[in-house]
Structures are given as C-alpha cells and as structure tokens.
Image 1 (tube, rainbow, N blue to C red):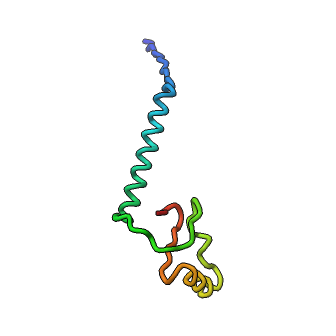
Image 2: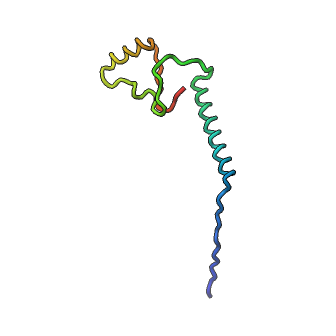
Image 3: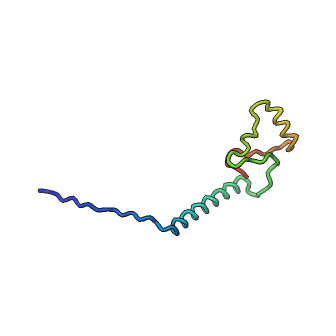
Length: 94
C-alpha cells in the first residue's frame, strides 16, 4: 500500500505598517514606564542628588573615576563638589 503525503504551504503575511508602529510604540512606552519605575524605587521622593560631575550618555561617570593617584584625584573632586559627591556608573542614571 502506498501512502499519500499531503503538502500544505504556510503563508506568512507581514503586518501592515500601522500594526508595526503600534507594537513598537507599545514596547517603547512599556520600556519607558519600567525605567521610570526603577528610578522611582531608587529615589522614591525625587529628592535632588548630591553634586558631582556630569555623566556621559552610556557610561556615566566611569571615566571620572581615578585610576592613578586616587587620593589626589578624590581630594580635587572634594574641593570642587564638596565632601559628598554623586557618581553615575553605566546607564543607571538619575
């Protein structure tokens, strides 16, 4: 006996640009919401942070940390910003 094998084609359709825009907008809004909630957990009362050097976009203050002559570098930062100084490392910025 011979068996018949049926072949079926699966047709995938590409969603319309409006649907893609809606999905991307929803994902971006959810990402923004999650990021905002994470920032509020870190600083729930939105109090101002202590003074410090301004952070770069993706790396924060990574390049402001001293690699040599740490004592001199941090004394210079203390003279400029005070005894308490705020650093942002990586994307975790306020």
